[in-house]
Structure formats: C-alpha cells, structure tokens
Length: 91
Image 1 (cartoon, rainbow, N blue to C red):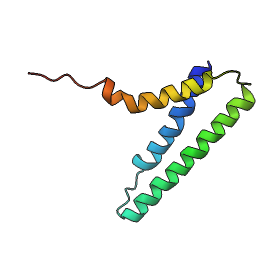
Image 2 (cartoon, one colour; image 1 turned 60 degrees about the vertical axis):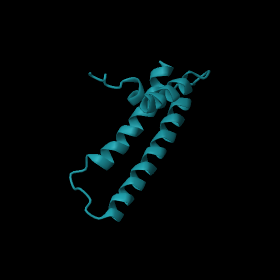
Image 3 (cartoon, one colour; image 1 turned 180 degrees about the vertical axis):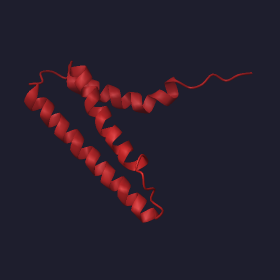
Image 4 (tube, rainbow, N blue to C red; image 1 turned 90 degrees about the vertical axis):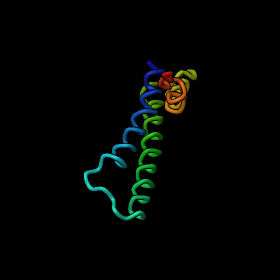
C-alpha cells in the first residue's frame, strides 16, 4: 500500500500541473501570462506534494522507506518511459 501511496504522491501533483497548464479553456496569447501560468502551476504542484507527504506521515504512520521508493519509482518512470518504450525502427 505504501508503494502505491508514494506513486500517487508523485502522479497527482503532476496531473494537477498538466491540467492547469495545458487543459485550460482559455489559451494564453501573451508569453508573460503563459510563463506566469507555469510558475503558478509549479507552485501548486510543490505545495500539493508537500501536503500529500504530510498527510501520509500523519494519517498512515509510515514506517520504513517504502513510501519514498514508490515516489521515486514513479518519478523515474516519468523520465525513463520515453527511453524504455521507443517505437521499433522499421527497415
């Protein structure tokens, strides 16, 4: 369960970031406003990650490193997936 919880702590804030930046109905035409949207989304992601870690330590009484293993594993898959799942070259 702690592995899943660690993975969720990694995935949910990243989903919030992506939904704020990329799925807004109104597209930013001004580059400055787009950059501000990225900063806002990153700040929300960091706060959400910290709150989820705090909630996990308070509510679940985490013992051992399994929560961090799940968190780091999910973050690593985010970066390694393009390398691991490359399309096969034809020809």
